[in-house]
Image 1 (spheres, rainbow, N blue to C red):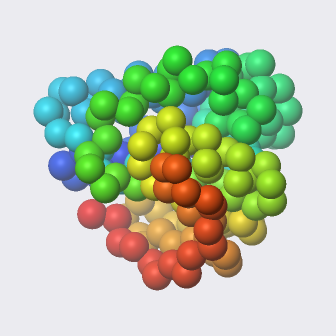
Image 2 (image 1 turned 30 degrees about the vertical axis):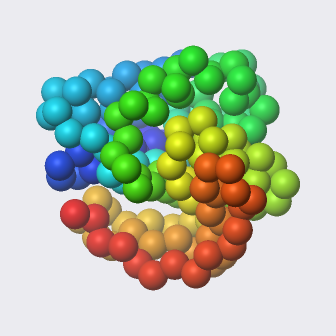
Image 3 (image 1 turned 180 degrees about the horizontal axis):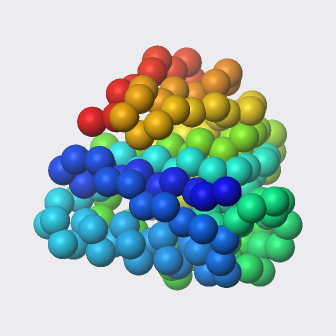
Amino acid sequence: DMTRVEGQVTNGTTIRMGGMSNGVGQMVAEVVRLATTRKAPVSRLRIFGHGKEGVMGISVGTGASPGYSPKLRSSLDFQNLNAIKADLEKLTPHFAEGAIVELFGCSTGGGANGNALLSGLANLWGVEVKAGALVQYYGTPDQTNAFEGPVMSAKPGQPVAQKREKPVAVD
């Protein structure tokens, strides 16, 4: 399985990540490289992959369980945010004002663990971070991608809230 990371830096770009340790660092480096090369801030960052409550897989690979070992640095995990904070902070100056991060992993936004992950990322990056609370299905990059079921949203300094979402087309 591959994780798909889409960042809108002037127009959509897809980054595909396979199984590896330190996939979070690799993803951050690639998004920063694209934003710097194009001299444009990231307005929307969408991450598609495996997930569970409070965990968004980045480079967990085939058959792996997201969050199985936060030490591998292959997922955004409410348990490893402090360990990967230095990597994640590198994204902060590359977000546009009003940017949104969407985590399309199954149940990533669910429960107390989901709240902890979303709040932690929103406060770290200074942007809104959203994730579905249930199983997520999505299409190809040229199709509309929408969350399935309840969507949890965190904004910097605010409590996590449930939102109703309408499908948003990929630009």
